[in-house]
Picture 1 (tube, rainbow, N blue to C red):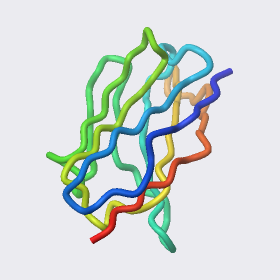
Picture 2: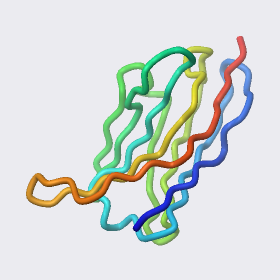
Picture 3: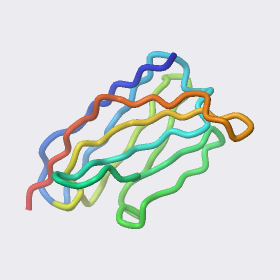
Picture 4: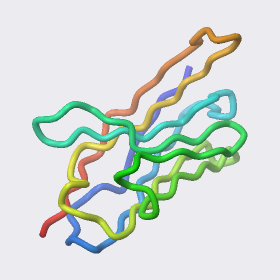
Length: 120
């Protein structure tokens, strides 16, 4: 079983940076996909960034060129480096670990979320 704990959120001015961390209690090496999602106030949760077990990454168009996702399997931690932050990046950020084999989902774990607020 994997438990995820996010940290690193806070209040920052537009143009600033934050680095979010997602620490896993168990090994994340088995997770095929590690995602960062966010939920802006009054809106649905949306996918922000993904990193696969092989290190491939993918980003939402709204954050490309500004956010970087990375993983350190030795530390069981996934990071989201967020630069050039905008007020519209405000929301609760969630870490998500998914493992699939042969197209079947084996597990899907979520963290409790960390608040990011970007002031204009």
